[in-house]
Image (tube, rainbow, N blue to C red):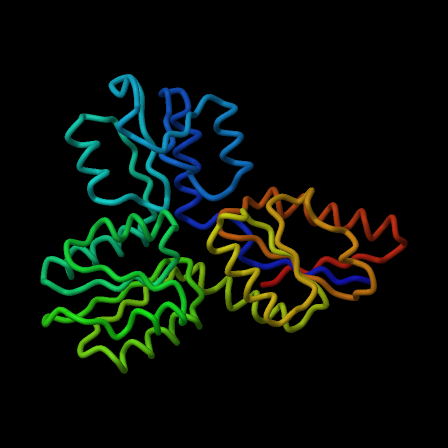
Length: 297
């Protein structure tokens, strides 16, 4: 018998769900997407097949009066919003409220003269957007190695430092970086801006990975939260897979195991989880293995 544990957090998070719903709602409005609406290639491809167009350079948009631009959940720099306003571009701002909160923290702290430290992937759209709301010195820290390379630094603002973190960052890793910076910088105003949904998913995958023989994380390969879930699971479970869609599951994973866990990222729709369950159930049936589904509560 194989017991299949399914995470209770398997569905799109609020920010992702809101952005996706808005995209489908406005497909008839000659819709442009400012980058992938969320980091899910299946949803992006489906939107494009229904007429949405992806644009990465808003200055090259044509016919802006008769179309709409949807700003993705990751948010954008302030200069992008300013450009849209100045050029009368019709836009739908679906920046996740949790990300908007960080924009406000950074904008306010920067206005007071504080330096800004952003803990996160410097190339991720969310971090690029956050950085764009600062007027003062910005330092981006990717991990502890990066922290030790960049902190302490010269010319620290006499007003102090404001520290924020990417909403999908590893909570335990952020706590370590925060502790390190607090010992070396004179005054740090720390904000734990990791999304509660992200934190809950990380706690659950850490617990599940210590209980099962193998674990499958379903989520976009560019999805920060899915990558973090895979990394955390891999720390505790050697037999771990990260797939974008259910058809990519390597079914040899069910060989010689008695338990597995199925976890979805914040940009993974519930339909993908349901299909994954059926694929695993069918594989077990074809191999003569009893399959028991256990939903986490």
